[in-house]
Amino acid sequence: MSAAHTYRAVVRSIVKFERPNVLQQLAKKQKEDIAKLTYRRIQVVRDQMTHKSDPVKLKELNKEAILLGAQVEKLKKWDPARDKRALFMKDRDLVRDIVMSSLQDTRSKSHLKNIEMFLTNQREYEELIERYNPGKKLSQDEKVKRTANKVGLEIPPDLV
Image 1 (cartoon, rainbow, N blue to C red):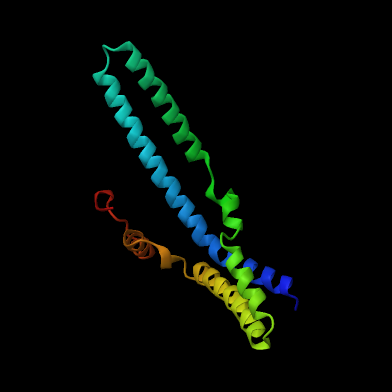
Image 2 (cartoon, one colour):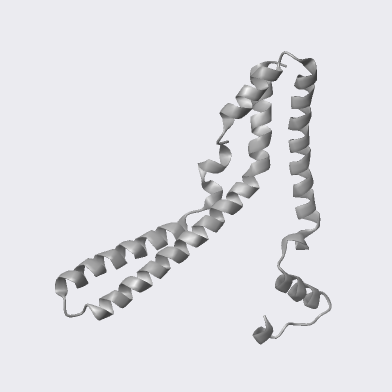
């Protein structure tokens, strides 16, 4: 196996392995950004109430509120799954240096191949666990609700 092929295989495995976590982080960041912008917009609206007598300041605050609203809508429409950042690895140079330095030794070559196989198999394992055990990543409230539904009961809305 050539150095380029080994390098590509390892990087490809790392990217595929990291992708679900990167998407989860991007979704979390999106949610945080929406909350921050919404909070800032609420502050601007409160400032508008206090500066009703100053037309220049009121006009400036109106522009800021409209801009913040547009940013919130843009973030709500943004889909993290379509973001290209999840398809690339940030520190490829480090992996390239490791691969290039270890190609002289056959033991290191087999070690790199084992790393690639491990990452591939671990990703497949996680996918299978998620597929056949869907309740694993649920919160405690969702687990209780799901268990109640299995036995034909419903959780009262005030307890959820």
